[in-house]
Amino acid sequence: MPSKNLDIFGILSVLVAHEVEFAIVGGVCAVLHGAPVTTFDLDIVHARSPENLARLTKALEELDAIYRHQFGRRIHPDASHLAGPGHQLLSTNMGQLDVLGTIGENEGYTELLEHMVEFEVRGMTLKVLDLPKLIEVKTAANRDKDRMVLPTLHQTLAEKLRKPT
Image 1 (spheres, rainbow, N blue to C red):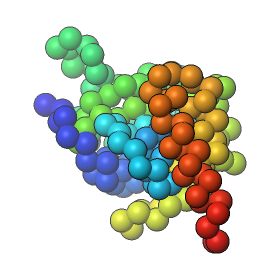
Image 2: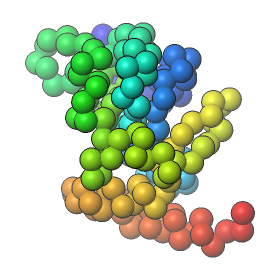
Image 3: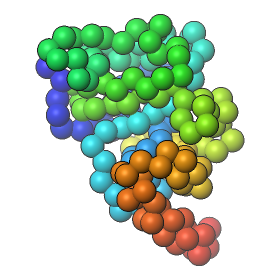
């Protein structure tokens, strides 16, 4: 049975162990950049090459990933689901994971590479969407939850720009 408690580092460890190419976006991305926000899931954008889809599928099997909101049915994602640009909203044995084919203006992993930075977290090298691009994506989404977090993201970016590197 999938867990309701989010173990971000557990999910990330499984993805890294399976050598999945992905980037962290969404709330966890904001937190890694220093924004004081709360999130209840992990959002990633993944490379959609056949090789990466095979690795991602194996990682999702290990996480016992199933689609959320299926009214008692246990539907597992497969490579054909993950190959498209859509959003796969999953529950896993370590919490909720949103596997996104594209974000923003239909931008996938490859298109977003120039907007990624790397973070070292618990011995893992993780690709993370840069803060200006995260702000751009959330602004374009124009959802209530995104509009609410934008002032915090703008303030976090302003503080990062003021600090010497």
